[in-house]
Length: 110
Image 1 (cartoon, rainbow, N blue to C red):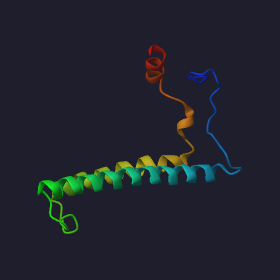
Image 2: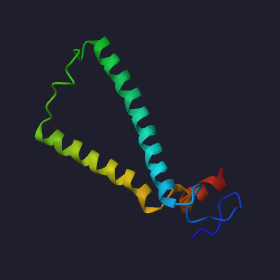
Image 3: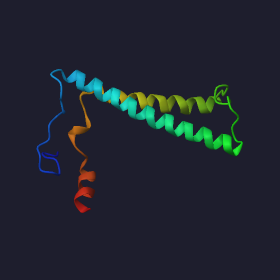
């Protein structure tokens, strides 16, 4: 197990900025949501513009879309994976724990 960051600084179990670590976890969750929402909105707007330009999508088509049962399974699985990722923030296991051994090895090679 890693005892220090590649910079030589000691690892801490969790970064905290507020007296109550739950506030830090909530802030991490909100910032994760904000980042994901921004990326999603940007990509969706770009995709809609590209599809409308090419004639592959008519305005309003997304609002009336109904997935097939197979598509619904995929969409549900993606949603569950995202919720699981998002909820990790509440466990107090932040990214401040450091990188995995394989990432550290690649970092040291480069």
